[in-house]
Image: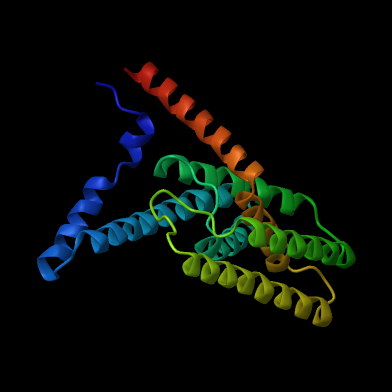
Length: 224
């Protein structure tokens, strides 16, 4: 029976099971705790894979710092707000690497004036407040949010992240005379993560996910 090529390349369930077995030998773990640990381990591996692939491409394109700051901002907000995701780890890593490097190239090729950058910051701030208030926290199948209290806490933490970022940008505008890479890239990261919370963001991710599945399946057919 043929398996999806992406799953062959990025199947880490055996590794996660082995890690969990080590925990089980040392600690008494119930089914609920095991599910949380499995999700957490998968998230760590997925994040490492995504960052490695994205930053490797960024080195090749000469956009390393732009991509790094975009991903750091994006990831920090995503921890609390959730957002659109792909169907498997390989697709997620590819999706993140492609999108972050496209955004990095856009940032590199389009240098902004300080006034225009401030306008972009305000737009990103207002849009993120709207998106978070309306859609966050966005569920994922591996970590469903089951209580209203938890949703409220995650939404508040998402808003705090955005407000802290905005305060940092205001301080930049007050004390520095030129646009900084970290400010530009982090603004793009906030915008993109906020977009992934929306219905349009989910549709975009779903289309990309289907394209990747089609490409990987086609590669598998040619190999076999």
